[in-house]
Image (cartoon, rainbow, N blue to C red; front, side):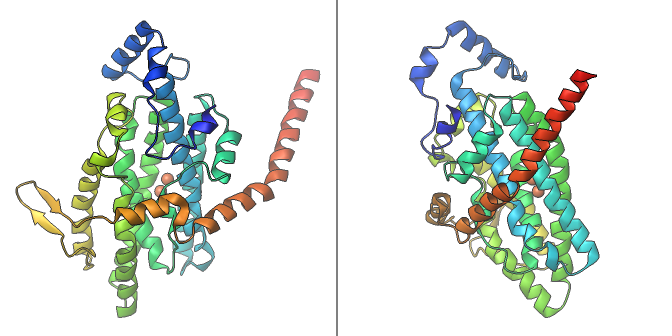
Length: 334
Ligand SMILES: [Fe+2]
Ligand SMILES: [Fe+2]
């Protein structure tokens, strides 16, 4: 049943009042009181179906984003310019695989299997972060991704360490530590290029130009067009709105660009002393929704790579299952 729910887009989802009304009022009330009291909800606790569905969708989308996110950077492992850069990039991409693993495991505690989630992804029914449907065209993109994409991920994920569902919150604690390393290595790489030859600096600027706006889109639609934010905030799945997090990201990142002599590609960017933050230009939401619909520059390529990885790995899964069964049989015989 959860698989079907993954088919919903970010805009047509759950909190169906009819379902909520049929749930025992005393249980709903006790659940809401626990959430309001900042207690974690654990897998065996009673929870409203809409809460469960929202979490399965959010956690599985997050898991898919981690593993699809391995692809644009994985592309560059063989072409890293030095052993040091190769070792860093290998570790980073491997971390993202680990993040996917923690998150699939957290989603499984809600009663959906990993196979169902993967199948939904491969069938094009599940979403993942649109940012990974952009290509990595030069080595400078590896810097921009770490600095901006992992930087935006941290903004989103730090508050999730206190999200109301226990397994999700605990997975985020470790994920955030690793994301912080990802952000720093990306910024350090970008800094090295910005201080390098004129051509290297031009590449760093070009990467910033291409990744800036998609990074701002990572926070999701604006608050006045994000119908589920209110319910997710009430259930403490979300702690900050999309626009609040986007503003924080801009405020932290603009001075980082200035410090290394790069220019954020936004002519409307201006410090606003009254609000204590930057004003910035309008985001092209048409582009965002086109990428959500799977029209991103390399969306097809990403899915083809995931599906062939899954199919090529079938023999490993089969062998591991047979091996596990033999071990159980041996220990039972002993
Ligand atoms: Fe990650
Ligand atoms: Fe990361």
